[in-house]
Image (cartoon, rainbow, N blue to C red):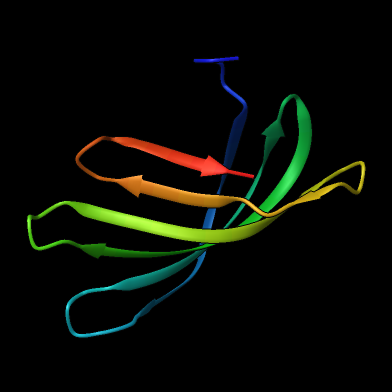
Length: 89
């Protein structure tokens, strides 16, 4: 399991808004994809900001629904310096 792809999706940003004068943004995404080979639809709202050291940081929560009517709530974290995104269900 370590190193294996568990989720892959493709979609669009559905909405964006500026939250403060420091450039903090909120973006809502909707994707179609697969998790563990099962088709799903994911809606995710992410808040993104730059830290004082210049690193970009994003964190958000969402809802994932499979074609079999199963549901999960993903927690998304991305640090721009690491170039990786992490999610927990």
